[in-house]
Image (cartoon, rainbow, N blue to C red; front, side):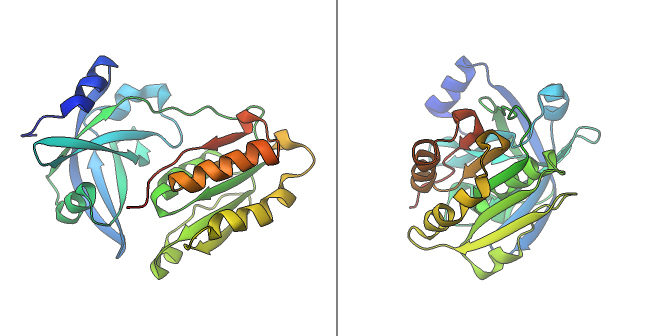
Length: 244
């Protein structure tokens, strides 16, 4: 990459982040707003070994101005045997989206692995309650793949009509996908109205995973922990993006 990574790169080096170079092997438009790009991993998956986990993400670097900027992306269908995976880009006006729109086989992308992790809920949940949107769908699908025999309810916020076509992974257990059109507090209101009855008497039997815009994630995480008194280890919340 022709430009430096600035203070972010310095911090990641100090934190012993590992750098890799990915090479584009294919490009697919899932919808007009979501583009899947496949890569060879540059040794990432072999280096990850047993630490490869659901919802795993890396920091990809995109040129913008005098330096590169990092954006986090979840690994989609990582295959250690072939050293391949994909990213799914929700297209909007931004550095990563501009790169994704122009990407072609043979292009390369630098990335740093540092900070990712997944604490598997223990005991294993009897039901999953999942809240997200197209930006977090890759992570949602990897979580559902990790628990194929666990019933799941997914509240999925949509912005465009085609978001309803985005695939949510199935499994041996039922997946109840509840699509919520984006608008104000609609997602949070729907979750507050419907989630409590799904928890059951044993709060340790459920696991709530949520990743949407930062404000909604914070509000719902506080609601789950304070109002519903869910144990901290049974709730995972992460803000994925901020409205521009």
